[in-house]
Image (tube, rainbow over the protein chains, first blue to last red):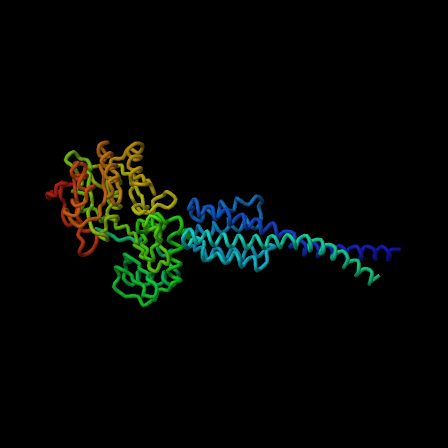
Length: 177
Length: 313
Protein backbone atom coordinates (compact mmCIF):
# COMPACT_ATOMS: atom_id res chain seq x y z
CA UNK A 1 0.00 0.00 0.00
CA UNK A 2 2.59 2.51 1.08
CA UNK A 3 4.74 1.68 -1.99
CA UNK A 4 1.90 2.68 -4.32
CA UNK A 5 1.50 5.99 -2.45
CA UNK A 6 5.24 6.65 -2.72
CA UNK A 7 5.08 6.03 -6.47
CA UNK A 8 2.22 8.51 -6.86
CA UNK A 9 4.00 11.18 -4.81
CA UNK A 10 7.25 10.66 -6.74
CA UNK A 11 5.49 10.90 -10.12
CA UNK A 12 3.67 14.02 -9.00
CA UNK A 13 6.87 15.80 -8.04
CA UNK A 14 8.62 14.82 -11.29
CA UNK A 15 5.76 16.29 -13.32
CA UNK A 16 5.67 19.43 -11.14
CA UNK A 17 9.42 19.88 -11.57
CA UNK A 18 9.46 19.62 -15.35
CA UNK A 19 6.31 21.76 -15.60
CA UNK A 20 7.95 24.56 -13.60
CA UNK A 21 11.07 24.31 -15.77
CA UNK A 22 8.81 24.62 -18.82
CA UNK A 23 7.00 27.65 -17.48
CA UNK A 24 10.27 29.30 -16.56
CA UNK A 25 11.43 28.93 -20.16
CA UNK A 26 8.00 30.18 -21.27
CA UNK A 27 8.33 33.23 -19.02
CA UNK A 28 11.22 34.49 -21.10
CA UNK A 29 8.95 34.52 -24.13
CA UNK A 30 6.07 35.92 -22.12
CA UNK A 31 7.92 38.93 -20.59
CA UNK A 32 10.11 39.94 -23.52
CA UNK A 33 7.45 41.79 -25.56
CA UNK A 34 6.42 43.82 -22.52
CA UNK A 35 10.02 44.66 -21.65
CA UNK A 36 10.73 45.67 -25.25
CA UNK A 37 7.65 47.86 -25.19
CA UNK A 38 8.75 49.49 -21.91
CA UNK A 39 12.19 50.05 -23.36
CA UNK A 40 10.80 51.88 -26.39
CA UNK A 41 8.62 53.95 -24.02
CA UNK A 42 11.73 54.99 -22.10
CA UNK A 43 13.69 55.83 -25.24
CA UNK A 44 10.76 57.77 -26.67
CA UNK A 45 10.42 59.82 -23.49
CA UNK A 46 14.17 60.41 -23.52
CA UNK A 47 14.03 61.58 -27.15
CA UNK A 48 11.21 64.01 -26.31
CA UNK A 49 13.09 65.42 -23.30
CA UNK A 50 16.25 65.90 -25.35
CA UNK A 51 14.63 67.26 -28.51
CA UNK A 52 11.99 69.57 -27.15
CA UNK A 53 12.97 70.45 -23.61
CA UNK A 54 16.79 70.12 -23.82
CA UNK A 55 16.60 68.60 -20.37
CA UNK A 56 19.92 67.60 -18.77
CA UNK A 57 20.23 63.83 -18.83
CA UNK A 58 19.95 63.19 -15.09
CA UNK A 59 16.47 64.70 -15.13
CA UNK A 60 15.61 63.32 -18.57
CA UNK A 61 16.46 59.77 -17.47
CA UNK A 62 14.53 60.10 -14.22
CA UNK A 63 11.45 61.31 -16.08
CA UNK A 64 11.84 58.68 -18.80
CA UNK A 65 12.01 56.05 -16.04
CA UNK A 66 8.77 57.21 -14.49
CA UNK A 67 7.07 57.06 -17.90
CA UNK A 68 7.12 53.26 -17.52
CA UNK A 69 3.71 52.41 -16.06
CA UNK A 70 4.78 49.61 -13.72
CA UNK A 71 7.92 49.16 -11.64
CA UNK A 72 10.33 46.64 -13.04
CA UNK A 73 13.70 46.13 -14.56
CA UNK A 74 13.30 48.79 -17.29
CA UNK A 75 12.27 51.58 -14.92
CA UNK A 76 15.07 50.51 -12.61
CA UNK A 77 17.49 50.77 -15.53
CA UNK A 78 16.58 54.37 -16.41
CA UNK A 79 16.42 55.64 -12.85
CA UNK A 80 19.55 53.78 -11.82
CA UNK A 81 21.45 55.37 -14.71
CA UNK A 82 20.16 58.78 -13.61
CA UNK A 83 21.39 58.31 -10.06
CA UNK A 84 24.79 57.02 -11.25
CA UNK A 85 25.15 60.05 -13.48
CA UNK A 86 24.78 62.38 -10.49
CA UNK A 87 28.10 61.26 -9.03
CA UNK A 88 30.98 63.68 -9.70
CA UNK A 89 33.04 62.71 -12.72
CA UNK A 90 30.41 60.29 -14.04
CA UNK A 91 30.36 59.74 -17.79
CA UNK A 92 27.22 58.57 -19.55
CA UNK A 93 28.98 56.02 -21.76
CA UNK A 94 30.31 54.12 -18.74
CA UNK A 95 27.13 54.51 -16.68
CA UNK A 96 24.94 53.32 -19.56
CA UNK A 97 27.02 50.22 -20.34
CA UNK A 98 27.30 49.29 -16.67
CA UNK A 99 23.56 49.53 -16.16
CA UNK A 100 22.92 47.50 -19.32
CA UNK A 101 25.13 44.66 -18.10
CA UNK A 102 23.96 44.91 -14.51
CA UNK A 103 20.23 45.38 -14.92
CA UNK A 104 19.03 44.58 -18.41
CA UNK A 105 21.04 41.36 -18.50
CA UNK A 106 18.74 40.15 -15.69
CA UNK A 107 15.68 40.68 -17.87
CA UNK A 108 14.16 38.51 -20.57
CA UNK A 109 15.78 40.64 -23.28
CA UNK A 110 18.17 38.85 -25.61
CA UNK A 111 21.77 39.84 -26.23
CA UNK A 112 20.81 41.32 -29.60
CA UNK A 113 18.22 43.53 -27.87
CA UNK A 114 20.88 44.72 -25.45
CA UNK A 115 23.28 45.48 -28.32
CA UNK A 116 20.76 47.97 -29.70
CA UNK A 117 20.58 49.69 -26.30
CA UNK A 118 24.36 49.62 -25.91
CA UNK A 119 24.70 51.21 -29.33
CA UNK A 120 23.32 54.42 -27.86
CA UNK A 121 26.07 54.72 -25.23
CA UNK A 122 28.29 56.93 -27.37
CA UNK A 123 25.54 59.15 -28.74
CA UNK A 124 23.21 60.19 -25.95
CA UNK A 125 24.23 63.43 -24.32
CA UNK A 126 27.45 63.63 -26.32
CA UNK A 127 26.33 64.91 -29.71
CA UNK A 128 24.00 67.55 -31.06
CA UNK A 129 20.26 67.29 -30.64
CA UNK A 130 19.64 66.01 -34.17
CA UNK A 131 22.16 63.19 -33.98
CA UNK A 132 20.77 62.13 -30.63
CA UNK A 133 17.19 62.19 -31.81
CA UNK A 134 18.18 60.29 -34.95
CA UNK A 135 20.01 57.59 -33.02
CA UNK A 136 17.15 57.22 -30.53
CA UNK A 137 14.56 56.98 -33.32
CA UNK A 138 16.63 54.36 -35.14
CA UNK A 139 16.95 52.32 -31.95
CA UNK A 140 13.22 52.65 -31.29
CA UNK A 141 12.42 51.43 -34.82
CA UNK A 142 14.67 48.38 -34.38
CA UNK A 143 13.17 47.59 -30.98
CA UNK A 144 9.63 47.89 -32.37
CA UNK A 145 10.47 45.31 -35.06
CA UNK A 146 11.86 43.03 -32.42
CA UNK A 147 8.78 43.56 -30.26
CA UNK A 148 6.58 42.41 -33.15
CA UNK A 149 8.70 39.30 -33.58
CA UNK A 150 8.71 38.70 -29.85
CA UNK A 151 4.91 38.92 -29.69
CA UNK A 152 4.63 36.34 -32.49
CA UNK A 153 7.12 34.11 -30.72
CA UNK A 154 5.25 34.47 -27.47
CA UNK A 155 2.01 33.06 -28.86
CA UNK A 156 4.00 30.22 -30.47
CA UNK A 157 6.45 29.25 -27.81
CA UNK A 158 5.06 30.36 -24.45
CA UNK A 159 2.34 27.69 -24.54
CA UNK A 160 4.60 25.22 -26.24
CA UNK A 161 7.11 25.27 -23.39
CA UNK A 162 4.43 24.96 -20.72
CA UNK A 163 2.92 21.97 -22.51
CA UNK A 164 6.31 20.46 -23.23
CA UNK A 165 7.24 20.74 -19.55
CA UNK A 166 4.18 18.83 -18.41
CA UNK A 167 4.46 16.23 -21.17
CA UNK A 168 8.15 15.62 -20.48
CA UNK A 169 7.28 14.92 -16.85
CA UNK A 170 4.53 12.52 -17.84
CA UNK A 171 6.91 10.77 -20.25
CA UNK A 172 9.53 10.25 -17.55
CA UNK A 173 6.86 8.92 -15.19
CA UNK A 174 5.57 6.48 -17.80
CA UNK A 175 9.05 5.22 -18.58
CA UNK A 176 9.89 4.70 -14.92
CA UNK A 177 6.59 3.17 -13.86
CA UNK B 1 48.73 88.20 2.75
CA UNK B 2 47.21 86.15 -0.01
CA UNK B 3 46.89 82.41 -0.01
CA UNK B 4 46.02 80.44 -3.10
CA UNK B 5 43.58 77.73 -2.24
CA UNK B 6 42.85 75.20 -4.87
CA UNK B 7 39.23 75.11 -5.92
CA UNK B 8 36.74 73.59 -3.48
CA UNK B 9 37.93 70.04 -2.77
CA UNK B 10 39.69 69.99 -6.14
CA UNK B 11 36.47 69.55 -8.03
CA UNK B 12 38.29 69.95 -11.31
CA UNK B 13 40.15 66.67 -10.81
CA UNK B 14 36.92 64.70 -10.95
CA UNK B 15 36.30 66.16 -14.41
CA UNK B 16 39.44 64.54 -15.82
CA UNK B 17 40.13 60.97 -16.89
CA UNK B 18 42.14 59.17 -14.16
CA UNK B 19 45.47 59.27 -16.01
CA UNK B 20 45.26 63.03 -16.61
CA UNK B 21 43.97 63.69 -13.08
CA UNK B 22 47.05 61.84 -11.79
CA UNK B 23 49.37 63.93 -13.95
CA UNK B 24 47.74 67.14 -12.71
CA UNK B 25 47.92 65.98 -9.08
CA UNK B 26 51.62 65.13 -9.45
CA UNK B 27 52.41 68.47 -11.08
CA UNK B 28 50.39 70.37 -8.47
CA UNK B 29 52.22 68.60 -5.67
CA UNK B 30 55.71 69.18 -7.08
CA UNK B 31 55.10 72.88 -7.72
CA UNK B 32 52.91 73.44 -4.65
CA UNK B 33 50.22 75.31 -6.55
CA UNK B 34 47.31 74.36 -8.77
CA UNK B 35 47.37 75.11 -12.50
CA UNK B 36 45.45 78.14 -13.71
CA UNK B 37 44.29 76.39 -16.83
CA UNK B 38 44.19 72.77 -17.93
CA UNK B 39 44.24 72.60 -21.71
CA UNK B 40 43.51 69.44 -23.64
CA UNK B 41 44.02 69.29 -27.40
CA UNK B 42 43.57 66.04 -29.27
CA UNK B 43 46.95 64.63 -30.29
CA UNK B 44 48.93 67.26 -28.41
CA UNK B 45 50.65 67.11 -25.02
CA UNK B 46 48.62 68.12 -21.99
CA UNK B 47 49.23 71.78 -21.18
CA UNK B 48 49.08 73.05 -17.62
CA UNK B 49 49.11 76.84 -17.69
CA UNK B 50 50.65 78.37 -14.59
CA UNK B 51 52.98 75.44 -13.92
CA UNK B 52 56.47 75.44 -15.35
CA UNK B 53 57.06 71.72 -15.92
CA UNK B 54 55.79 70.69 -19.37
CA UNK B 55 53.71 67.54 -19.45
CA UNK B 56 54.64 64.66 -21.74
CA UNK B 57 51.21 63.08 -21.64
CA UNK B 58 49.58 63.08 -25.09
CA UNK B 59 45.86 63.83 -25.01
CA UNK B 60 43.74 61.40 -27.03
CA UNK B 61 40.31 61.86 -28.59
CA UNK B 62 38.96 59.53 -25.90
CA UNK B 63 40.26 61.85 -23.15
CA UNK B 64 38.55 64.81 -24.78
CA UNK B 65 35.29 62.84 -25.05
CA UNK B 66 35.52 61.97 -21.36
CA UNK B 67 36.06 65.56 -20.27
CA UNK B 68 33.32 66.79 -22.59
CA UNK B 69 30.93 64.40 -20.89
CA UNK B 70 31.93 65.35 -17.35
CA UNK B 71 31.87 69.10 -17.90
CA UNK B 72 28.46 69.03 -19.58
CA UNK B 73 26.96 66.46 -17.20
CA UNK B 74 26.72 64.20 -20.29
CA UNK B 75 24.15 66.63 -21.65
CA UNK B 76 25.70 68.47 -24.57
CA UNK B 77 22.22 69.27 -25.88
CA UNK B 78 21.37 71.13 -22.66
CA UNK B 79 24.33 73.50 -22.85
CA UNK B 80 24.07 74.56 -26.50
CA UNK B 81 23.02 78.01 -25.35
CA UNK B 82 26.22 78.27 -23.30
CA UNK B 83 28.35 76.94 -26.14
CA UNK B 84 27.01 79.69 -28.34
CA UNK B 85 28.20 82.23 -25.83
CA UNK B 86 31.62 80.57 -25.91
CA UNK B 87 31.93 78.44 -22.80
CA UNK B 88 30.16 76.25 -20.30
CA UNK B 89 30.53 76.25 -16.54
CA UNK B 90 31.44 72.90 -15.05
CA UNK B 91 30.38 71.77 -11.56
CA UNK B 92 32.60 73.66 -9.10
CA UNK B 93 32.47 76.94 -11.00
CA UNK B 94 35.25 76.14 -13.46
CA UNK B 95 34.86 77.87 -16.77
CA UNK B 96 35.35 75.52 -19.68
CA UNK B 97 36.07 76.73 -23.20
CA UNK B 98 35.45 74.44 -26.16
CA UNK B 99 36.75 74.47 -29.71
CA UNK B 100 35.53 72.35 -32.57
CA UNK B 101 33.61 72.62 -35.79
CA UNK B 102 30.79 75.13 -35.75
CA UNK B 103 27.34 74.02 -36.82
CA UNK B 104 25.36 76.88 -38.30
CA UNK B 105 21.65 77.31 -37.88
CA UNK B 106 19.20 78.48 -40.55
CA UNK B 107 19.91 82.13 -39.75
CA UNK B 108 23.63 81.72 -40.44
CA UNK B 109 24.57 82.05 -36.79
CA UNK B 110 26.45 79.44 -34.80
CA UNK B 111 24.01 76.91 -33.38
CA UNK B 112 26.43 74.62 -31.62
CA UNK B 113 29.84 72.98 -31.94
CA UNK B 114 30.54 69.43 -33.05
CA UNK B 115 33.72 67.36 -33.39
CA UNK B 116 35.09 69.10 -30.33
CA UNK B 117 38.86 68.68 -30.38
CA UNK B 118 40.12 70.93 -27.66
CA UNK B 119 38.98 71.88 -24.22
CA UNK B 120 40.28 74.54 -21.87
CA UNK B 121 39.39 74.20 -18.19
CA UNK B 122 40.01 77.44 -16.33
CA UNK B 123 40.47 76.33 -12.77
CA UNK B 124 38.41 78.50 -10.44
CA UNK B 125 40.59 79.54 -7.54
CA UNK B 126 39.82 81.15 -4.25
CA UNK B 127 42.68 83.57 -3.66
CA UNK B 128 41.88 84.71 -0.16
CA UNK B 129 42.92 88.29 0.42
CA UNK B 130 43.52 89.06 -3.24
CA UNK B 131 40.97 91.88 -3.20
CA UNK B 132 42.37 93.60 -0.07
CA UNK B 133 44.37 96.23 -2.02
CA UNK B 134 41.22 97.14 -3.95
CA UNK B 135 38.89 97.65 -1.01
CA UNK B 136 40.12 101.16 0.02
CA UNK B 137 39.10 102.43 -3.42
CA UNK B 138 35.59 101.13 -2.89
CA UNK B 139 34.83 102.99 0.30
CA UNK B 140 32.91 106.23 -0.14
CA UNK B 141 33.01 109.33 2.01
CA UNK B 142 29.72 108.39 3.74
CA UNK B 143 31.09 105.02 4.91
CA UNK B 144 29.27 103.17 2.23
CA UNK B 145 30.53 100.92 -0.49
CA UNK B 146 30.62 102.79 -3.78
CA UNK B 147 29.87 101.23 -7.15
CA UNK B 148 32.91 99.98 -8.97
CA UNK B 149 33.91 98.04 -12.04
CA UNK B 150 36.95 95.80 -12.35
CA UNK B 151 38.30 96.36 -15.84
CA UNK B 152 40.75 93.93 -17.37
CA UNK B 153 41.70 91.67 -20.26
CA UNK B 154 40.84 87.96 -20.02
CA UNK B 155 42.81 86.03 -17.39
CA UNK B 156 43.55 89.06 -15.22
CA UNK B 157 41.69 87.60 -12.25
CA UNK B 158 38.45 89.57 -12.38
CA UNK B 159 36.18 86.77 -11.17
CA UNK B 160 38.60 85.70 -8.44
CA UNK B 161 38.74 89.30 -7.18
CA UNK B 162 34.96 89.67 -7.18
CA UNK B 163 34.67 86.46 -5.15
CA UNK B 164 37.15 87.75 -2.60
CA UNK B 165 35.49 91.17 -2.50
CA UNK B 166 32.18 89.51 -1.57
CA UNK B 167 33.94 87.56 1.17
CA UNK B 168 35.75 90.58 2.64
CA UNK B 169 32.70 92.87 2.59
CA UNK B 170 30.20 90.40 3.98
CA UNK B 171 32.57 89.15 6.69
CA UNK B 172 32.69 92.66 8.13
CA UNK B 173 36.47 92.75 7.79
CA UNK B 174 36.44 96.44 6.88
CA UNK B 175 36.01 98.26 10.17
CA UNK B 176 34.53 101.39 8.60
CA UNK B 177 31.80 99.48 6.83
CA UNK B 178 30.79 96.79 9.30
CA UNK B 179 28.93 93.83 7.87
CA UNK B 180 27.81 94.53 4.34
CA UNK B 181 24.93 92.54 2.89
CA UNK B 182 26.05 91.18 -0.45
CA UNK B 183 24.00 89.55 -3.17
CA UNK B 184 25.89 87.73 -5.90
CA UNK B 185 24.01 87.45 -9.18
CA UNK B 186 25.91 84.47 -10.54
CA UNK B 187 24.65 83.93 -14.05
CA UNK B 188 27.37 81.42 -14.91
CA UNK B 189 27.74 79.85 -11.44
CA UNK B 190 31.35 80.98 -11.50
CA UNK B 191 31.69 83.45 -8.66
CA UNK B 192 30.27 81.31 -5.87
CA UNK B 193 30.57 77.93 -7.63
CA UNK B 194 27.22 76.81 -6.22
CA UNK B 195 26.38 73.15 -6.01
CA UNK B 196 22.68 72.58 -5.40
CA UNK B 197 22.33 76.20 -4.34
CA UNK B 198 25.09 76.21 -1.71
CA UNK B 199 28.25 78.22 -2.50
CA UNK B 200 31.31 76.00 -2.70
CA UNK B 201 33.64 78.96 -2.34
CA UNK B 202 33.88 81.13 0.76
CA UNK B 203 31.87 84.19 -0.24
CA UNK B 204 31.27 85.40 3.30
CA UNK B 205 28.53 84.82 5.88
CA UNK B 206 26.22 87.68 4.85
CA UNK B 207 26.11 86.80 1.18
CA UNK B 208 23.10 85.57 -0.76
CA UNK B 209 23.63 83.97 -4.14
CA UNK B 210 21.19 84.03 -7.03
CA UNK B 211 22.70 81.07 -8.80
CA UNK B 212 22.41 80.60 -12.58
CA UNK B 213 20.16 83.64 -12.66
CA UNK B 214 20.19 85.87 -15.75
CA UNK B 215 21.86 89.14 -14.84
CA UNK B 216 19.07 91.52 -15.79
CA UNK B 217 16.37 89.61 -13.92
CA UNK B 218 18.72 88.81 -11.04
CA UNK B 219 19.59 92.44 -10.44
CA UNK B 220 15.90 93.34 -10.28
CA UNK B 221 15.04 90.38 -8.05
CA UNK B 222 17.88 91.22 -5.66
CA UNK B 223 16.80 94.84 -5.32
CA UNK B 224 13.17 93.93 -4.74
CA UNK B 225 13.46 91.21 -2.15
CA UNK B 226 16.95 90.66 -0.78
CA UNK B 227 17.73 94.23 0.35
CA UNK B 228 21.45 94.13 -0.41
CA UNK B 229 23.95 96.89 0.19
CA UNK B 230 26.08 95.63 -2.66
CA UNK B 231 25.31 93.46 -5.67
CA UNK B 232 28.24 91.57 -7.14
CA UNK B 233 27.99 90.36 -10.70
CA UNK B 234 30.29 89.28 -13.51
CA UNK B 235 30.88 90.51 -17.06
CA UNK B 236 28.67 93.48 -17.65
CA UNK B 237 28.46 94.44 -21.30
CA UNK B 238 25.10 94.30 -23.03
CA UNK B 239 22.74 97.28 -23.10
CA UNK B 240 20.30 95.18 -21.04
CA UNK B 241 22.91 94.72 -18.31
CA UNK B 242 23.54 98.45 -18.25
CA UNK B 243 19.84 99.23 -17.90
CA UNK B 244 19.56 96.81 -14.98
CA UNK B 245 22.61 98.32 -13.29
CA UNK B 246 21.14 101.82 -13.66
CA UNK B 247 17.87 100.56 -12.21
CA UNK B 248 19.67 99.11 -9.18
CA UNK B 249 21.78 102.24 -8.74
CA UNK B 250 18.62 104.35 -8.67
CA UNK B 251 17.35 102.10 -5.90
CA UNK B 252 20.41 103.00 -3.84
CA UNK B 253 22.28 99.72 -4.20
CA UNK B 254 25.98 99.69 -5.04
CA UNK B 255 27.20 97.48 -7.86
CA UNK B 256 30.48 95.64 -8.01
CA UNK B 257 31.00 94.20 -11.46
CA UNK B 258 33.60 93.30 -14.02
CA UNK B 259 34.10 94.29 -17.63
CA UNK B 260 36.29 92.89 -20.38
CA UNK B 261 38.45 95.77 -21.59
CA UNK B 262 42.09 96.79 -21.56
CA UNK B 263 41.85 100.52 -21.16
CA UNK B 264 39.59 103.48 -20.56
CA UNK B 265 39.55 104.10 -24.33
CA UNK B 266 38.36 100.50 -24.89
CA UNK B 267 35.52 101.05 -22.46
CA UNK B 268 34.53 104.27 -24.12
CA UNK B 269 34.41 102.66 -27.55
CA UNK B 270 31.44 100.55 -26.43
CA UNK B 271 28.17 102.51 -26.56
CA UNK B 272 26.53 100.63 -23.68
CA UNK B 273 29.54 101.23 -21.45
CA UNK B 274 29.74 104.85 -22.48
CA UNK B 275 26.12 105.33 -21.38
CA UNK B 276 26.82 103.58 -18.10
CA UNK B 277 29.82 105.77 -17.32
CA UNK B 278 28.00 108.95 -18.36
CA UNK B 279 25.05 108.10 -16.09
CA UNK B 280 27.17 108.54 -12.99
CA UNK B 281 26.05 105.20 -11.59
CA UNK B 282 29.63 103.96 -11.44
CA UNK B 283 32.02 105.69 -9.06
CA UNK B 284 35.23 103.73 -9.53
CA UNK B 285 37.02 101.99 -12.36
CA UNK B 286 39.72 99.62 -11.19
CA UNK B 287 42.04 98.67 -14.04
CA UNK B 288 43.88 95.39 -13.76
CA UNK B 289 47.42 94.76 -14.92
CA UNK B 290 47.43 92.46 -17.95
CA UNK B 291 51.15 91.78 -17.66
CA UNK B 292 52.63 89.74 -14.86
CA UNK B 293 50.64 87.71 -12.35
CA UNK B 294 46.84 88.06 -12.28
CA UNK B 295 44.95 90.15 -9.77
CA UNK B 296 47.16 93.25 -9.65
CA UNK B 297 45.75 96.75 -9.62
CA UNK B 298 47.18 98.93 -12.38
CA UNK B 299 45.33 102.15 -11.55
CA UNK B 300 42.08 103.36 -10.09
CA UNK B 301 40.03 106.14 -11.63
CA UNK B 302 36.59 107.68 -11.35
CA UNK B 303 34.05 107.26 -14.11
CA UNK B 304 35.66 110.05 -16.13
CA UNK B 305 39.08 108.42 -16.10
CA UNK B 306 40.64 110.70 -13.47
CA UNK B 307 42.94 109.01 -10.99
CA UNK B 308 41.61 108.71 -7.44
CA UNK B 309 43.29 108.18 -4.09
CA UNK B 310 42.02 105.56 -1.66
CA UNK B 311 40.16 106.33 1.53
CA UNK B 312 41.97 104.93 4.55
CA UNK B 313 40.03 101.88 5.66
